[in-house]
Image 1 (cartoon, one colour):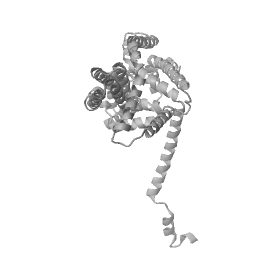
Image 2 (cartoon, helix red, strand yellow):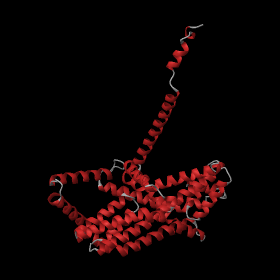
Image 3 (cartoon, helix red, strand yellow):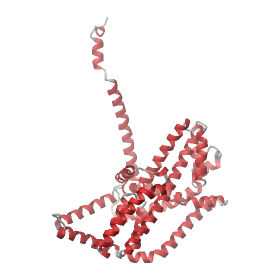
Image 4 (cartoon, helix red, strand yellow):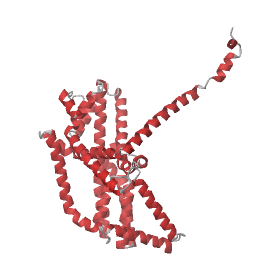
Length: 409
């Protein structure tokens, strides 16, 4: 019998062994640390390549918005390249016509927008110092405004740390928009072909599920864009008309800003509402500004509680906390670019996860008979409303070699 085989050896071994719960917790912690390192590295890379991220994001939104007319042209038998070129050129001509009709009046009013806002801020400063019940001095307000300017500057330059001047910002944004336009052309031209080729690389048993998830993501993105545009038009008309009726100026710029602000939930509504109130305060007085503030608040509540569920549909409903944390997280990680794409990305992720769970509950993650039928139904629901319409469902033909070569190109 060896020295370790005595009566006290088992007790000593038990005392030196790690508790199973601690062992599992430590292993899980190391895995989480590894995942966290990978995520940090990925977000760092995205921040460095924010121009490419912006171009791809804009191209995806742009091609999704233009896909319905492109699908209509495809059903008429036009070649893919002609479909893409016609769609993009037609959209450009339409936007040029709208701009030519509105820019003269809008530009004339926008010239007074900056001084008007400055006057409104000065009026608020005078009230805080002279008439308000708060003990606020001019020095406190100057320090607050300086600090706010610094924070806004830091936020605008947080996308990669390389934005050193306004000229660089303009250059990189223009570059991203040009890349987005080119990418949109190829998405409209070869999106369905590339989708079939990519799905063909997966195992056979997973293809139906991937088609189903892709169809759900595509419809979600389209629903988000249509809903945001609809809400933006409604809010812009109501708030702009209110500013006009109470005697305020710059109603058209306010309506335009409100429309585009609808694509950034919460933060966009707050910025547009504050802007409308400030402009009305200077151009029409305190009473008119109060009316605009009340109308803006009521419009936002009406949209959030009643109109948004109808416009977006049940499949796109997101809890306000999900939207809020998506905005905060996207802004913190990628600056303005992250704030712009956080909510649509969050909506797509939530709906894709819900679709994957539904497929799993239906029996088999794409392996059961119910999933191909559902995938075909999804593709049929979307019609030719997305590049996955040609790729969705189990009846899509396998891509030939020329398709793969074109997709690689």
